[in-house]
Length: 429
Image 1: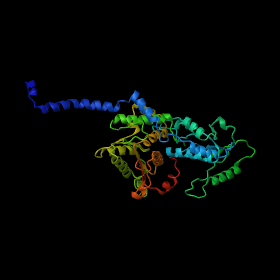
Image 2: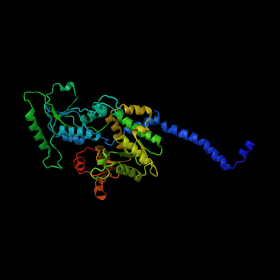
Image 3: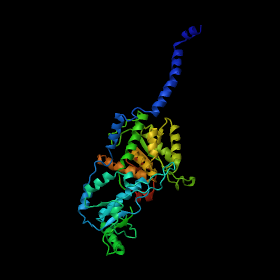
Image 4: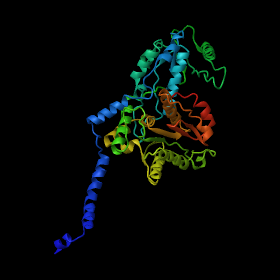
């Protein structure tokens, strides 16, 4: 009787029964595949993607000729050696610029250098676990750096910290280099810098000493291979988790793949609007980041910030949009083993992973108050100009309120006169 009742049901009943039966199986399969995406292992396609990604970079190919021409015009001083006092400090973007400034001043002064080393703010990772403080080679591609300097400026000797410094005479004071910003002072020329340096040296050099080591306060552009490989793994994992992201690892900047967003707001409620400045508070900045993603028809945004609480708020805010936007982070897409590798890095190295992913996002948006934003935006603009696609990124300051930079591929939110005057014209792309 019961069997007869079942066989007499209308066709719609069987369709519903089939859906109800298969839905849990489909959901379970979907959740498993999210956590174990195809291509997530060490298969051929995975390795090919990673290698293709690592083979491309914004600064490739490196052109040594401008530096080489500059070095050839100088008379090199074998007794003058610059050392970066205390190692480079600050944010990732500031680190890059500080070392590059250091090298620039050394070339201007015809001096050799002691290889800079990176000094961490603290010897702990984000979980409070003590970690070894890295040297230059842990954060940056030391081999590439030495080869590039040797190719571009063979006149410069690069010493390594330690034994090679024992025969040098280190001056007791630290020299702050003369400004070379000719846009803010007509007297900021190379001759003025050299005159100031020579005067400072005469005050502190013991003429009976042999070697000379001059301490100058002030990074390099390519990250350590392991950090770059982890960034490539983040991108590959994102593509596997969200198959509609058409990421071509052979493109320096993949087109129409994902939006990169950097969140940087102010800690205290009283400062949430930073004297009324647009986009400095969380709500306005988060809305602008997500609106930028929606404008570019992106349903996935790679997000990064030093404030993990605000990242969680941004993710929740994105999920409630219609249609929803998926806000991901490096921790949310990696496998457990890769997350463990990521957590073993220092905070600065972890931030470099974000830096590498963000600067190769399809489009990027970030606030003016983080050096990360301008460093990424200007590097991308420099690459774009090299492709013959010139666009005035500062026209937007006249066309829109509260936007400092927009070249169609990168957008910097907010306005800050001091940063726009000092940082933009001095930062290295």
